Image 1 (cartoon, rainbow, N blue to C red):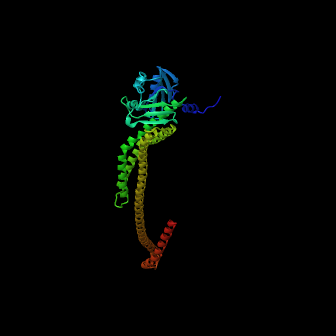
Image 2: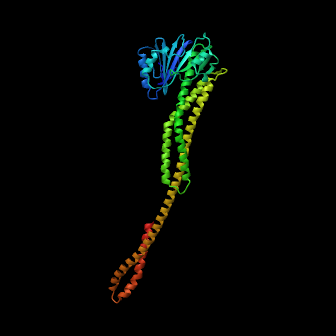
Image 3: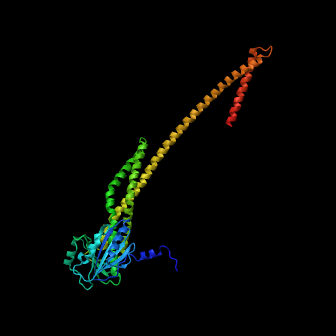
Length: 416
């Protein structure tokens, strides 16, 4: 028996996610994207298990993928990092390409307890290849005339028409005209188109946050410039400057913590969007803007705004660190000067104490000698014929010399 790696099965399943069942025109699809956050996957799976309980499950419900069939409608559910997609598929001819009623009553049941907040909802229509292209008047009825995107995709094997706007029913609209799609190409094309739109919308979530916090970053930059100028002035109060720099650093750290994930996600989603855009192999249709023009003109400015916001935060963090380092250097120099002055004062006091001690030692020599001379005088006074005064005079120099010599030797021994 093969000894499998602990992640082999999950990695194999991961390679087969993000796919749609094979279908061909004519066909109707609807995809709803709900933002869940990273910790709400359990609610999404419970919702899918509830839907599967009353229908036939084609793909076993996994953590991130399931295919459920209910009558003529197929539901493909997929869980992403921050959001989940619900794709409804119904094959067959249709008269009204953008009527949500084609998916009722299953659509209402699915929306009833759906967790998360809907960030995107799109109706997709693939008419039969034999049907003629819709007339201009029909297109004007389906889409907003001033913003129609019409271009070839998949090297001309299909053509898409959309205005990428929300209509009165709350859904966007996408018309795919099959020119020469075969096999899985229809499913792959729809998947790439929807991933492009989903990743684009998720990338745009960072723009309102960047716009909202940009004035705060501007205020912090102005305050940092004032503090940096104050650091260069010798008359400024270091403790006050340090308090304000600490507060500014804390505010900046809070902003970075609140926005880093969203800004990083915006950058990642933007790269995914551009990858999907390149894979669509878009060709222009004369008189209309292409999907590439629409995406780049609306997505890239938003992404650059978010990148600029992140770069400003990073630059502000670096400059705050530099200013803090300069202030700490000045404070360290001031402390070093104070320590030097303190050591000089201690050295001066020590020298004074030494001089005083030497004075006291000199006086102690006199005092000790005085008492020793008196003792010696008494001893010599007992010698017959030796006057007391003469004995004292003879003893004084000898005693003084001996006491001074003894104290000197004692000081040297203590020094050694």
